[in-house]
Length: 83
Image (cartoon, rainbow, N blue to C red; front, side, top):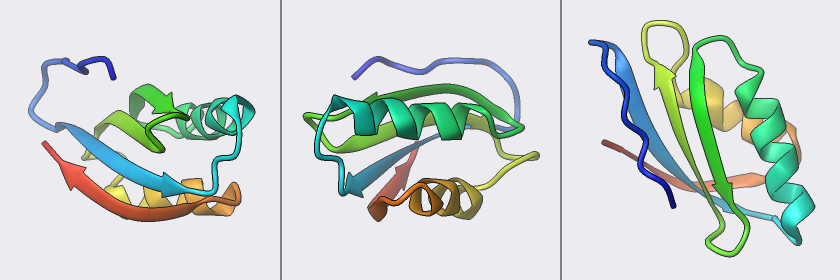
């Protein structure tokens, strides 16, 4: 999965492990709903790996809100890891 790099004091990257993706269209759906959220800068979703790597402004949106967005789209967040 691609590296997400962007400068700024509040920029954070979180890797979400996701359950419920059954084909590539699911990954596209998750990317679409997440990238529309205010504060999200970049989103990479991998169907084969079952994960989403999201770069976002932590002063605008947080991990819980991102996880909630993924789950409202019909998927389950199994874990998350910030870097």
